[in-house]
Length: 234
Length: 234
DNA sequence: GTCTATAAAGCGAGCGCTCGCTCGTAAAAT
DNA sequence: ATTTTACGAGCGAGCGCTCGCTTTATAGAC
Image (cartoon, rainbow over all chains, first blue to last red; front, side, top):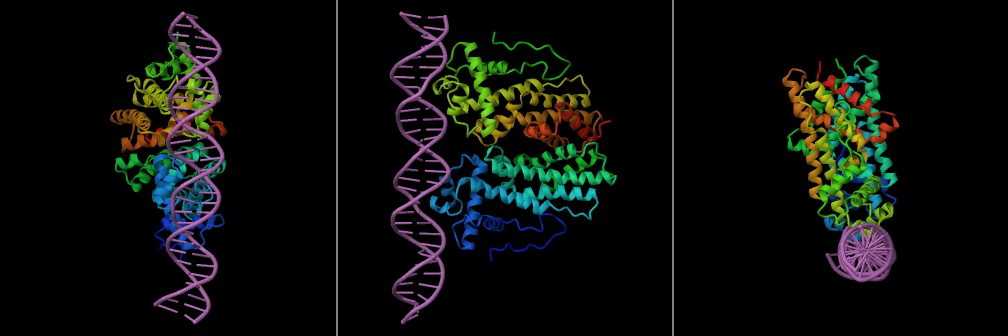
């Protein structure tokens, strides 16, 4: 019943295979942190977790996670202080619930690019997938990016690892394309390093692109055109 | 005496004309916030401000500005709580001292690209200048970038404005180059938007590039090569 | 259906602590 | 002698977190 209802696969898009609804993501959290969550009935826990995380993202993205007090969160969720602490044993655990979900989903969505595609197509798959994923889980990614900088070692490590993973995936495709003669790249690592911040810009400066009325599709298309020209895609 | 000692201009580099030493930057702060600083003797004020800002950047870049307590700062600077409050009237003012200095220096260093240079050279001037400036004032820029996200309206506005300014400068050069037939650019605004995060990556992810032993010069060169290929510089 | 025993979930005042900030006083400089 | 600077204990407020208690949901007996 708390199982994420399967979404019919649409094409090959990395996000189409996954259920990224708030409830499904809350169910993931319950699965990963079930041992520290004191609430026993799964459907209750999932429902409350969804609300807790939703409010956490909203509040933290407005004033910062550190500045968000648990009393604020209590007011926003409608749950008492005591009730909140039935779902996590410390504020840091709440932080890890969000960060863990993000890196888990990143791995599932982008971790295995379709090997049958030629490198140029695979690069497009990766770029479009990254934009689509961060668009679908926008508050999660802005949270992870903004908060992970100055926070406890464990949380920080999680964020850094996830980021390196994506850059590694990009580098792999670039290397394959270079070997196959599809790309002209002097330094694969450096090129991947330059690509990453442009991908991140989509969610880090989301408000800017909203103001300029740039759609997700338009962004990934512009980005691909820019990168394609830079690495001499034929 | 507190006047920044002039540095002999080296070539045309935007940073060469400016004194970016800690003392000179502290003198700027004194000039801008002289009315709220209760210490009267300029040389004392400048000296202490330099120490205060230096420690603030070190502490805040480690644990975040919000998490840095003024007791921490007191211990680190060797000044008492009371003494600290002779140099700023609130923690937010301390924040604005740093952010204000950054945007002031950005404007002076990059605000007037040499019009006599042809657009491709002017773009190189901007890119190299941005990298050199952020390298020279690394802790200031990481501070501004990381802290300005989730902070009081005034501070936030300052950071956003400064960022838009730089992007605008880039867009201007790109537009000039497109008009002159130097560049092939479909959407100037979008291209400038894509360039900015790559420039910022240099200081936002500085530790990554340090680990990979990438020098400032190597970065701006790689970036220019990438961008040059992308916008069809001839 | 109604009653009732037990478990599950929620409540919120209060604990110990740290925060930004103040102010009466001491030390240093002139 | 007077001004300038530095000191640091102390203030009220707000923090993360706890715990004794109440309310709500559930299940078996009749």
